[in-house]
Image (cartoon, rainbow, N blue to C red):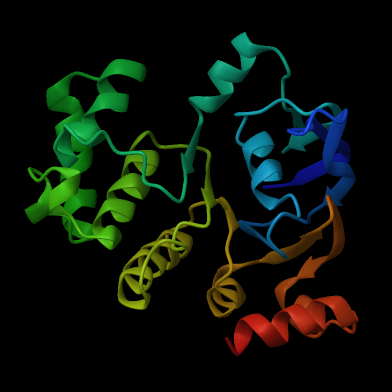
Length: 248
């Protein structure tokens, strides 16, 4: 994928009633032809806001986003169509608690993408086995571990055969063992050719799967480039961030 972001601005009403809060401030970024982009940086810097815009979930106040030469639409009708071509995974799984894992997986395939239940089950059969989830398919979310729930959420996003995946801190709520399960799954997806944009604080993992890394702070990109260049950066701010996160 090729991603070009030009002068992206996102403002929200200040919760204290003091006008507007600027979350993204004329953010610009141009990638090479890559498979994976990882967004890193301090909390509150704008990473998740940017990811939501890239996934078509929010419309920016100003600026443009272009994937592979096609500009992201701004009208809701076109955005609905765009969202059907991508997959999005959040920190909190977003699984329906009253449905089994299988029912959570079937729902978007049948209700949004128009597959028959039989066709949807056939599409899911191999991935469920591939990612070690087949034996958990009839369990409800409350019966699953955090790692299993997040892997189901990723599989749900992947099952619609998206052009690319957007993942927002998919391991932030998990302990190290469960994080490892999810990171291994994402690593396998990368090896299989899946395109994705990922927000993460797992810098060791970012080093392994990212083609390019962008450091976002105070609503803008301060450092961006190929992964090896990023980890060799001379930027004091990025170097300090890496020191904290790699040795935490």
